[in-house]
Image 1 (cartoon, rainbow, N blue to C red):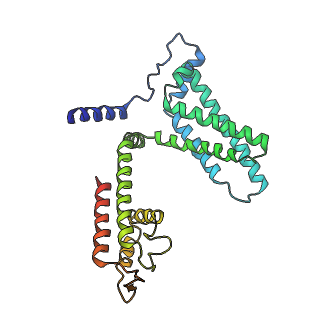
Image 2: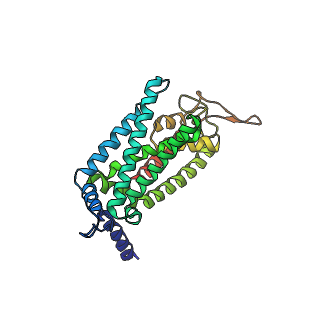
Image 3: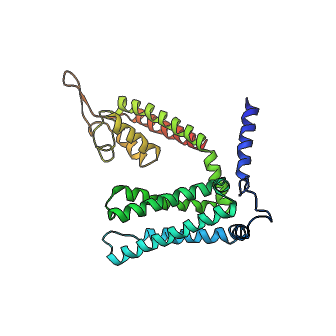
Length: 278
């Protein structure tokens, strides 16, 4: 019912304001002095900003890599990778001790994400050291370290709120994508029927036409992104003597129709915009 749907949406909204610690209890006074000390460090207000600064610097060094770079710069970047990996591993170990074990550590999803990225980074460095960096999978695994930039989304309450809102909105976004695909297929079929033989011109050409299913879908997607869609419409309005109409046994018609083209493109624009707005 409508009331049940509203209640479900309300419950999802509550999740946006979940506690940062996700059920991790602070250590009591009977805990070891080391855990108390480390817990005080990881919960300090400057700890997370410091880690985020380190991640930003790490991403900056990774972005500084370029083709045909000098050997000394490659060696420098490799050394920096090891240093940053060591920092991330120390952070993970410190949090595990501070939270009282792996069970409490993995209660926080960001900690699970960090552990996954650290493991991926370690695997990439091990493969690189044993293969000399000639394995294609090394580059793929190395990309995992770039994923740490997603932790920047947890930097401020506003960004975190928007990110969690985006996650909750994924089902609705999926519905919009499916509806858009249905719209594209329908208009592609109509386009093949009405403009499949239109003469190649400035914008209707090899890469944008309705002569086949694949190029037709590509053309409709181009219309959906509003990429010069009005020029495509103009080309589909072509009339003699700019095109040819021959009757009889050797029937040829590479012309368009101003009325049909106008109705086709304008209706697609209105319906497409309506879907994305709503």
